[in-house]
Image (cartoon, rainbow, N blue to C red; front, side, top):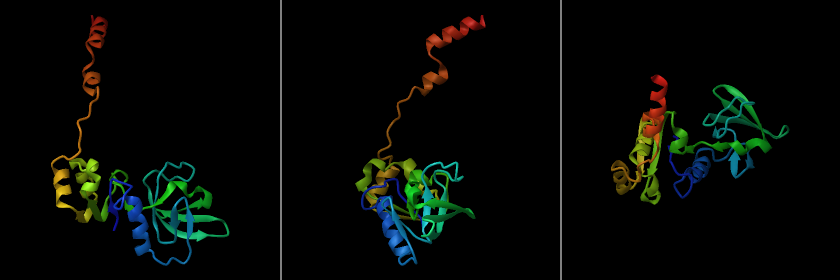
Length: 185
Protein backbone atom coordinates (compact mmCIF):
# COMPACT_ATOMS: atom_id res chain seq x y z
CA UNK A 1 0.00 0.00 0.00
CA UNK A 2 1.95 3.07 -1.13
CA UNK A 3 1.89 5.98 1.27
CA UNK A 4 1.93 9.44 -0.22
CA UNK A 5 3.45 12.43 1.54
CA UNK A 6 4.72 15.76 0.28
CA UNK A 7 7.43 15.93 2.93
CA UNK A 8 10.54 13.78 2.87
CA UNK A 9 11.68 14.74 6.37
CA UNK A 10 10.30 14.25 9.87
CA UNK A 11 8.68 11.32 11.59
CA UNK A 12 5.96 11.13 8.90
CA UNK A 13 8.15 12.02 5.95
CA UNK A 14 8.66 9.61 3.07
CA UNK A 15 12.23 8.77 4.14
CA UNK A 16 11.19 7.60 7.60
CA UNK A 17 8.08 5.87 6.26
CA UNK A 18 10.18 4.01 3.68
CA UNK A 19 12.56 2.70 6.36
CA UNK A 20 9.66 1.58 8.57
CA UNK A 21 7.54 0.10 5.77
CA UNK A 22 10.51 -1.76 4.35
CA UNK A 23 11.25 -3.20 7.80
CA UNK A 24 7.65 -4.45 8.12
CA UNK A 25 6.86 -5.42 4.50
CA UNK A 26 10.21 -7.02 3.62
CA UNK A 27 11.61 -7.97 7.04
CA UNK A 28 13.96 -10.90 6.35
CA UNK A 29 15.17 -10.81 2.76
CA UNK A 30 17.51 -13.63 1.69
CA UNK A 31 20.15 -11.07 0.73
CA UNK A 32 20.51 -7.30 0.78
CA UNK A 33 22.98 -4.50 0.13
CA UNK A 34 23.24 -1.11 1.84
CA UNK A 35 24.25 1.88 -0.22
CA UNK A 36 23.65 5.63 -0.06
CA UNK A 37 21.64 5.35 3.18
CA UNK A 38 19.21 2.74 1.86
CA UNK A 39 18.89 -1.03 2.06
CA UNK A 40 18.10 -2.79 -1.23
CA UNK A 41 16.69 -6.32 -1.16
CA UNK A 42 14.69 -8.62 -3.42
CA UNK A 43 11.01 -7.73 -3.15
CA UNK A 44 11.59 -4.01 -2.48
CA UNK A 45 9.59 -1.43 -4.45
CA UNK A 46 11.98 1.21 -5.79
CA UNK A 47 11.82 4.45 -7.78
CA UNK A 48 14.32 5.98 -10.17
CA UNK A 49 14.87 9.65 -9.25
CA UNK A 50 16.66 10.87 -12.38
CA UNK A 51 16.41 10.38 -16.12
CA UNK A 52 18.85 7.67 -17.18
CA UNK A 53 18.80 7.43 -20.97
CA UNK A 54 21.46 4.70 -21.04
CA UNK A 55 19.28 2.38 -18.95
CA UNK A 56 16.03 3.68 -20.48
CA UNK A 57 14.55 4.49 -17.04
CA UNK A 58 13.26 7.88 -16.05
CA UNK A 59 12.51 10.03 -13.03
CA UNK A 60 9.47 8.57 -11.24
CA UNK A 61 9.62 5.09 -12.84
CA UNK A 62 8.65 2.39 -10.33
CA UNK A 63 10.27 -1.02 -10.24
CA UNK A 64 10.87 -4.06 -8.08
CA UNK A 65 14.24 -5.38 -6.93
CA UNK A 66 14.27 -8.92 -8.29
CA UNK A 67 17.74 -10.03 -7.21
CA UNK A 68 21.14 -9.00 -5.96
CA UNK A 69 24.16 -10.40 -7.73
CA UNK A 70 27.03 -10.25 -5.21
CA UNK A 71 29.52 -11.69 -7.73
CA UNK A 72 28.75 -9.01 -10.33
CA UNK A 73 28.26 -6.34 -7.65
CA UNK A 74 24.85 -5.33 -8.99
CA UNK A 75 21.20 -4.94 -8.08
CA UNK A 76 18.73 -6.13 -10.72
CA UNK A 77 15.47 -4.18 -10.88
CA UNK A 78 12.45 -5.03 -13.03
CA UNK A 79 10.65 -2.04 -14.57
CA UNK A 80 7.44 -3.08 -16.39
CA UNK A 81 8.79 -6.54 -17.21
CA UNK A 82 12.25 -5.33 -18.26
CA UNK A 83 15.34 -6.06 -16.16
CA UNK A 84 17.71 -3.18 -15.50
CA UNK A 85 21.14 -3.66 -13.92
CA UNK A 86 22.45 -1.18 -11.35
CA UNK A 87 26.08 -1.67 -10.25
CA UNK A 88 26.41 -1.16 -6.49
CA UNK A 89 28.24 2.15 -7.01
CA UNK A 90 25.39 3.54 -9.14
CA UNK A 91 22.48 3.09 -6.73
CA UNK A 92 22.45 6.78 -5.78
CA UNK A 93 19.48 7.52 -8.07
CA UNK A 94 17.38 4.60 -6.81
CA UNK A 95 15.26 4.95 -3.66
CA UNK A 96 12.75 2.72 -1.89
CA UNK A 97 9.19 3.47 -3.01
CA UNK A 98 7.00 1.96 -0.32
CA UNK A 99 6.20 5.63 0.44
CA UNK A 100 6.64 8.55 -1.90
CA UNK A 101 5.99 12.27 -1.88
CA UNK A 102 2.86 13.77 -3.42
CA UNK A 103 5.12 15.52 -5.91
CA UNK A 104 6.67 12.22 -7.06
CA UNK A 105 3.27 10.52 -7.21
CA UNK A 106 1.77 13.02 -9.65
CA UNK A 107 0.62 11.30 -12.79
CA UNK A 108 0.46 7.89 -11.09
CA UNK A 109 -2.38 5.90 -9.57
CA UNK A 110 -2.24 3.21 -6.90
CA UNK A 111 -4.84 0.68 -5.69
CA UNK A 112 -4.56 2.13 -2.17
CA UNK A 113 -3.05 5.31 -0.74
CA UNK A 114 -2.36 6.20 2.88
CA UNK A 115 -1.88 9.93 3.48
CA UNK A 116 -0.42 11.16 6.78
CA UNK A 117 -1.69 14.68 7.36
CA UNK A 118 -0.57 16.62 10.44
CA UNK A 119 -0.10 20.25 11.45
CA UNK A 120 3.63 19.55 11.89
CA UNK A 121 3.87 20.08 8.11
CA UNK A 122 1.62 23.15 8.08
CA UNK A 123 3.42 24.79 5.16
CA UNK A 124 2.24 21.95 2.93
CA UNK A 125 -1.38 21.92 4.05
CA UNK A 126 -2.88 23.18 0.82
CA UNK A 127 -6.06 22.13 -0.94
CA UNK A 128 -4.31 21.38 -4.24
CA UNK A 129 -1.80 19.04 -2.56
CA UNK A 130 -4.52 17.22 -0.64
CA UNK A 131 -6.53 16.87 -3.86
CA UNK A 132 -3.50 15.50 -5.71
CA UNK A 133 -2.80 13.01 -2.91
CA UNK A 134 -6.40 11.81 -2.63
CA UNK A 135 -6.82 11.36 -6.38
CA UNK A 136 -3.81 9.00 -6.55
CA UNK A 137 -5.88 6.22 -4.92
CA UNK A 138 -8.02 4.08 -7.26
CA UNK A 139 -9.85 1.89 -4.72
CA UNK A 140 -8.88 3.01 -1.20
CA UNK A 141 -7.73 6.30 0.30
CA UNK A 142 -6.95 6.56 4.02
CA UNK A 143 -6.18 9.87 5.74
CA UNK A 144 -4.28 9.44 9.01
CA UNK A 145 -3.62 12.42 11.21
CA UNK A 146 -5.34 15.41 12.71
CA UNK A 147 -8.77 16.81 11.86
CA UNK A 148 -7.31 20.29 12.28
CA UNK A 149 -4.69 19.57 9.60
CA UNK A 150 -7.35 18.31 7.18
CA UNK A 151 -9.40 21.45 7.84
CA UNK A 152 -6.40 23.69 7.23
CA UNK A 153 -5.71 21.95 3.92
CA UNK A 154 -9.34 22.09 2.76
CA UNK A 155 -9.60 25.79 3.63
CA UNK A 156 -6.52 26.49 1.55
CA UNK A 157 -3.89 26.26 4.25
CA UNK A 158 -0.55 27.46 3.05
CA UNK A 159 -1.49 28.01 -0.57
CA UNK A 160 -0.01 31.32 -1.53
CA UNK A 161 -0.76 33.66 -4.35
CA UNK A 162 1.81 33.31 -7.09
CA UNK A 163 3.21 36.52 -8.47
CA UNK A 164 4.23 36.09 -12.09
CA UNK A 165 4.37 38.22 -15.21
CA UNK A 166 2.26 35.74 -17.12
CA UNK A 167 -0.56 38.21 -17.76
CA UNK A 168 1.83 40.84 -19.06
CA UNK A 169 3.55 38.29 -21.29
CA UNK A 170 0.25 37.05 -22.68
CA UNK A 171 -1.26 40.48 -23.21
CA UNK A 172 2.00 42.12 -24.22
CA UNK A 173 3.39 45.27 -22.64
CA UNK A 174 2.36 48.69 -24.04
CA UNK A 175 5.80 49.03 -25.64
CA UNK A 176 5.45 45.65 -27.38
CA UNK A 177 1.92 46.55 -28.55
CA UNK A 178 3.24 49.83 -30.05
CA UNK A 179 6.03 47.98 -31.85
CA UNK A 180 3.59 45.36 -33.13
CA UNK A 181 1.16 47.96 -34.46
CA UNK A 182 4.03 49.69 -36.29
CA UNK A 183 4.58 46.50 -38.31
CA UNK A 184 0.88 46.08 -39.12
CA UNK A 185 0.40 49.55 -40.67
